[in-house]
Amino acid sequence: MQVDQLAIEAAARRIAGDVRRTPLLHLPEWGVLKLELLQLAGSFKPRGAFNRMRSAGAGPAGVIAASGGNHGVAVAAAAQSLGLRAEIFVPEIAAEAKRARIRSFGAELTVGGASYDEARQASEARAATTGALMVHAYDQAEVLAGQGTVALEWEEQAPGLTHLLVAVGGGGLIGGIGAWHRASGVTLVAVEPEGCPCLHEALAAGRPVPATVGGLAADSLGARQVGALMFPIAAGLHAAGRLLPVRVTDEAIRAAQRALWERAQLVAEPGGATALAALLSGAWVPPAGAKVGVLVCGANTDPGSVA
Picture 1 (cartoon, rainbow, N blue to C red):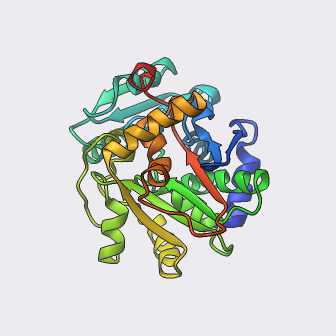
Picture 2 (cartoon, rainbow, N blue to C red):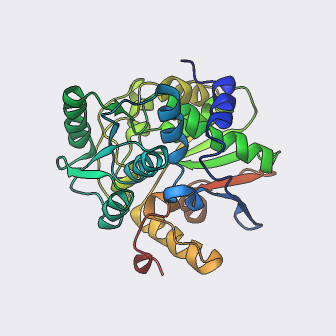
Picture 3 (cartoon, rainbow, N blue to C red):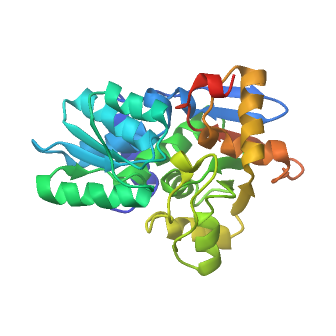
């Protein structure tokens, strides 16, 4: 399956009854914020999860996934909605708030190692035994196409944006958004925490390579390396000058969380505030005349940690 505008349009039709059309918040000093933290299950992830499940189908064994947290919540919620059994493997760093949300949707939860990569390996071994349908967090075509529906929707709601700031983990989100905007003039600002630089390392090496995983947003953006499917999309846009890799500090991410609360009363998790952190910290400065969009992509955190 090729991930392109046709695949994304098909995904949008397929999942239209399953996900929310999330609103925009227009703030002159920041730009146009796309509030995917208000999506079902608290992040953009249900878009890809529903598209994978509805495209591939699942048998009696149900579905299985590995996740730092948000993907697991999304798969659990989608499985419950579709009447499927779900098993979710998380690493030890997964936040308790996210573990509780996974359980709240009726999924079986297993802690499968110290890192996301170890949890993924454990989930794949389990799927080989049970025959459950794997729903990858970021490296499946159906998942990328589902995440790309964010871009389709955003363009319909706010045509004319020139720069989109998007947080990057394993790359399913920016890969889907990049696939939608491959032929447009929009520039993507790919924002990573300094502790999780897997896209930065991949672009430097010319291929996906292992990177360090650590820091404040590691539970949502802490992939060991970017996906093989998204990398050609990102690399092509980067070569054309239309994907700008930016890294931000944990301090900048925490400041962006506070700013979202103080300015808009929005509780965003660290990964959800990472894109905005690039703008507020000056890690990325908009060029003259830019019309900026910022994706606020996740809310699965303890509200007391922000407010």
